[in-house]
Amino acid sequence: MSEPEEDQYELVTPIVLARSNGGPYDDTALVAGMTCGALDHELTMTATLHALPQERWLDVRLLPQVDLIAMRHGYVLEHGDKHAAGYQRIGFAWA
Image 1 (cartoon, one colour):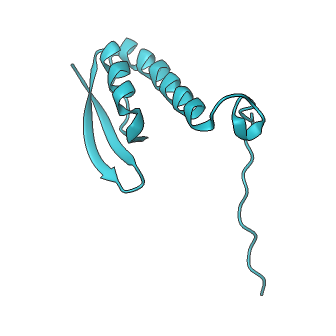
Image 2 (cartoon, rainbow, N blue to C red; image 1 turned 120 degrees about the vertical axis):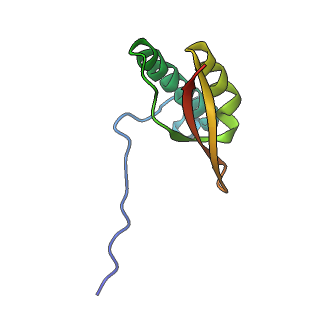
């Protein structure tokens, strides 16, 4: 019996600006910027609807910036469990 092939995934839209795809920008910095930008957009929508965003796990290195983004939209961060891989669970509450 042969071993099943490992699942492989391909991006629908590759991040061509990332150094790993031949682009000029550091992959980690690019992903951090995209993550923070997506969160800012989400919090814009949830604050408009006067709703609380869902909890999530985030890279702890992003938390200082995420805290500022949250404050901009009237939220405060609620810090939860930390994971050994460098992630922390965060939630949002109204300031």
